[in-house]
Figure: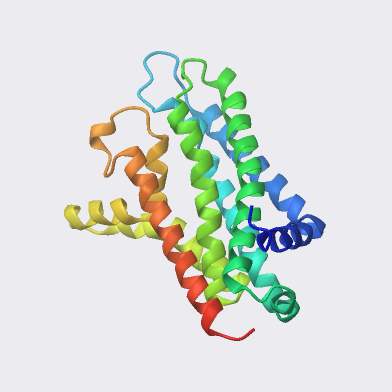
Length: 246
């Protein structure tokens, strides 16, 4: 590891772990993922022939856990702008590229742990409720990566907007409003295109385990779309961080 990067990484980790809301949000990510998945699994009846994608049903909670991850990631940057602490941070770590990279690295570490716990818990809770479903590693690992990428998307937007509230609002709109717009578009071609490029509609394709030919986008390709959203937001946040004063 670059010697100049270690102090930035240590500082960001210290700030994140000592923030009282961090651990509640991480716990909330796992709890929301597990709780909604349990409710979804309990609502599915498969007494005879089950046509539902049971693995995807057991991972329904990811759609709620992502909101908590988005809020946590937005606070990693936005809170410092809101309190004026960003000036102190930049004085201590003048390398802005290094600063954003450190924030991203720490966020990936904690969100990865919370996402893994949430996804594993969701699958374990759903198992007795949906005994016929088989574990598909691509869906499980992809769901963990999905939550991490949502966090990076929110982090980049927080750096770009310099506001936790604005970043969280934009991300939540992209995740929840975009699929609604895609469904209400009457032109089937455009509706499918919107589903192919939407961060949530494309990203959650990685959870699908059956009828893959009917999906708007292939599972890993869909996760790749979300990765491009995250990369784009980080690049935007990086440019704003470089060009504007705190």
